[in-house]
Amino acid sequence: MAEFKWQSSNGRVQMAEFKWQSSNGRVQMAEFKWQSSNGRVQMAEFKWQSSNGRVQMAEFKWQSSNGRVQMAEFKWQSSNGRVQMAEFKWQSSNGRVQMAEFKWQSSNGRVQMAEFKWQSSNGRVQMAEFKWQSSNGRVQMAEFKWQSSNGRVQMAEFKWQSSNGRVQMAEFKWQSSNGRVQMAEFKWQSSNGRVQMAEFKWQSSNGRV
Image 1 (tube, rainbow, N blue to C red):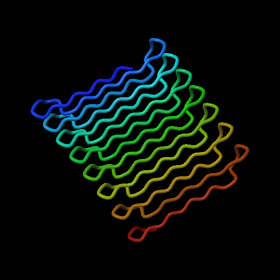
Image 2 (cartoon, one colour; image 1 turned 90 degrees about the vertical axis):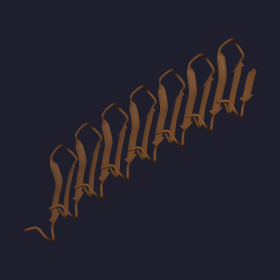
Image 3 (cartoon, one colour; image 1 turned 30 degrees about the vertical axis):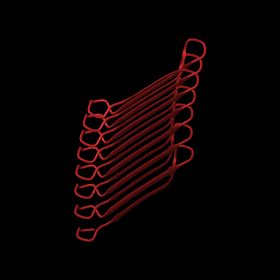
Image 4 (cartoon, rainbow, N blue to C red; image 1 turned 180 degrees about the horizontal axis):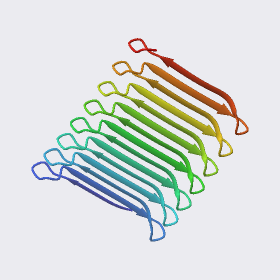
């Protein structure tokens, strides 16, 4: 184990801390921390863990107040050299990005679940959410949501489910207040490739329908 700490008040470095552990000559755990007040970097933290020379978990955090980056967090986990879970978070107040979150999970090298979220207040995108699930490489469920207040789109929601590669259920919803469309809803269900139920709804107050 090697541990290093540094502190300074009138210099650039406020606090730098480094830890190192190893058992068989390979890195078991490496942890690095950095803090500064008058410099650009407010806090940068890096963690690394490994057992067999491959990355088990890598975590990176970054925070800043007078810089563009408010918070960026990245996590990585793996057991057999393939990505088990990768999570990325980003937040900013004076930049365009308010919150962007991405999650990835996989067991056999194929995508099990991928989730993406985006939020913004002064940008066009208010909320965009995308989810993806799959077990055999084909789409099991795909869900997309979009919301906006100052843009044209108020709410658009799309869902897709399938078991054997054919469409089991497809649902689409659209709502808008300052646009022409008030509500349009479309549903589709099928079991053997033929249409079991198809439903379409349309509502409008200032339109013709």
